[in-house]
Every structure is written in structure tokens, then in C-alpha cells.
Amino acid sequence: MTKSALTAAFAAMLVAFVAAPAVAETDIKFALDWKFEGPTAPYFVAIDKGYYKAEGLNVTIDTGAGSVSGIPRVAVGTHQVGFFDLNSVVRFRDQNPDKDIKVVMMLYDRPPFAIGTLKKTGITKPKDLEGRVLGAPAADGAFAQWKAFVQANGIDESKVKIENVGFPVREPMLADGKVDAITGFTFSMHFNLLQKGIPADEIKMLVMSDYGLSLYGNGIIVNPDFLKSNPEAVRGFVRATIKGLQDTVKDPKAAVKSVMKRYEIGDEKTELERLELVLREHIVTPWVKQNGVGDVDPARLAKSIEQIGVTYEYKNKAKAADVFTNQFLPPAADRKL
Image 1 (cartoon, rainbow, N blue to C red):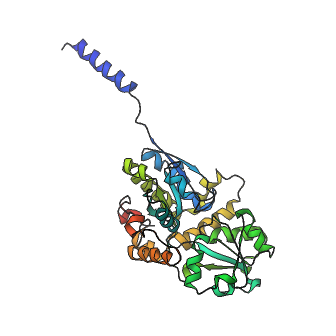
Image 2 (cartoon, rainbow, N blue to C red):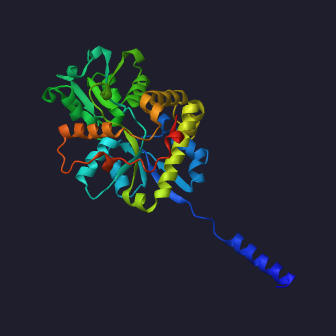
């Protein structure tokens, strides 16, 4: 081949290379359980620092309306990934055996499910709820554990009046004395009550995991079809999320700014305190410090499934491996916080 022919061939190859389309990113719609608040920082840090993009992912994040109601959005594929309550996933799978939905990464090792009340009510232990009015949103992840909580603590449920309340009025009703206690996540109830003018030392939380429940909390769930057809995308999503979480743990003050970009009407001080509470109480637990974030203790998970079954009649009780898989997690050394 002559020099001119080589030059022409090289030029043609260069043109073809430049004209070739870029490798398409995999789109992932990620459904949160709630609003853009402090605890969502790891995901927005992962977006802002390009961690998802580096994994070939184009991630968009949508708000939610509770830790239970959003699970069907992932199950049917409206969203490929979501952040929801593992215990509700157990029940959802049992009621929808054709939906092999799994948790691929655990975040709330110590679940924030709690009964919130005020000191003036005199409620200091679970049995004190008898004869009282409990305000509980139907879609609340904490209320989803109510029957197991009742059984674990010998509460006479017939003596507790349950009032179905909306999320926006839950804390105002408690503050105004219209209910005696409410169900919810610790970090939602606590800060919402502060915003209603309730002093911190007047707020009382009965965290369910301190009263007999061995349950896990929220984790990352994935649409079954997406999981099968895009396993590397799922691994990439988990890796990037862990990086975002690690950065958040190292510098919460910087991380919360990624949230405030999307939550301009929020108060940065409140969201930072909310984030720090979640990290301290629910994510960076002693077990996670030792084993790394994302995984579960299979024996504890099996026990939690049994505990759910005390007050829920299974059609075909799941095994721990049916509900959670760690095959999409990086090595433990890469998951240290």
C-alpha cells in the first residue's frame, strides 16, 4: 500500500471513530421512600461527584410517599430501583409470588421504626399505649410493624384505638393532644415535632428494635427483570451508592449541601442534624463497623422473617436468601465506613 493510500485509510478510520456513537448510559429511575431530606445525601453525593456516571449509569431520583406504598412501583418496573422497607418486601413477595423482588443492599441496619410520644402523656413503655389513641399513617413503614410490636410486648391491641392519619398531620395532632402517640421513623417524627415548637427533652421515642423486634429497616430493592438483564448495572449502582455513603460519613456538612440543591425551601441546619442522627443511630452501627455496610446477618434476617410470621399468615414463607442477596455487593473491605 502506498503512503497516500495509508494516509487515506488512516483518515477514514479516524472519521469512523469520531462519528461512532458514544456508548449509551443505562438509565435508572430510583424511587425514594420519602422526600429529599438529609438522609438522602449519599445518593445526591454520588450524582454530584459522578460516581453513578463513572459506572455508566444515568440515575434520576424521585420522591416517595412512604416505605411501603412505593414497593409496587419497583415491582412493576415504573422504577428500576427503590429504597424501601425490607419487612414490607417480605410481605409483598408473599402476596405477589410472581414478583421475585429482592433487597440487594441494606442501609438501615438498626431500623428507625418507632412510637413517638410526649413526656406529658406518661407513656414510657409499650404497655402504656393501652387505653390511648395511636395516630398511624396507613403507608407508614413503622406502622407496618405494629402487630409484631404488639405481640412482642404483650400489648392488648383491643385497648389501643388506631386512628388513620395522614403524614402531614401526624406530628401536629400529637403536638395538639389529639392523639397520644404516633408511629413513624425516629428522624422524621423528632424533627417535625421540633418544628412544631416541642422542646427536645419533651419528645419520647420508643424505638421498636429496643423492644423485642429483630427486624431490619430500609434497603435498596431492584425490579426482578432489570436485575436479571442488567446485573452489572446493579453492581455499579451499589458500588457508586457506597462511595456516596462513605463520603457522607466522612463529611456530613459537605454532603448535605447536595441535598439542599434539590430542597431549597428546607433548613440546612435541620437537615444536617437529621442526617447525622440517621448515620449515628441507624446506619453506622457496631455490626456495620465490623462487617461493612450493605450486608445482613442471615441468622438475624431469618429470625425477623419468623417474627413477621407471628402476626402475618404466610402463604409460602420466604427464606432469607429469597429476600436478600449480597451477590451485588463489593468485598467487605470496600464497604467499610
